Length: 193
Image 1 (cartoon, rainbow, N blue to C red):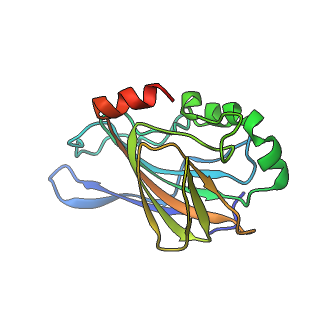
Image 2: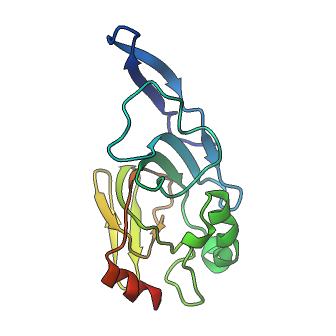
């Protein structure tokens, strides 16, 4: 499934008398390779459903269907392994993007159009921190792009974008997604696009 090492998740909690304890140490329960984009693997680490986040010994929020954006008012953290772009994907990928975004629970996030700069163009109403862990990635925006290397951190502020892997080798990125709300003036501008 992935050429990268598996993720080990350590979850802490509290005993009945309030002492700190390990609740879980082990592999992630939700690791999904997308059928529409083979080699793309989502590793779901954790999510919160509100802010401030409830601090408790509650159930694992990562089990269940894969969902791209964070919960309304919440956060999501995941690793994503992204394979190199292929000529076939660049030529024919746009036709599969509806299916790909359907697999990750947000078909409406896809913004790909006939002349989009990349088949994975999409937008979510969130602030996302994207960190390259291993490999290289190119961030593509409507009118700009930048090469990212290990240690590069992207602060994605609800913009239309895609991740293009032009390196010839897989890339692993860490994403922390924070639920957001577009500024009303920006929301009006985006409605016209």
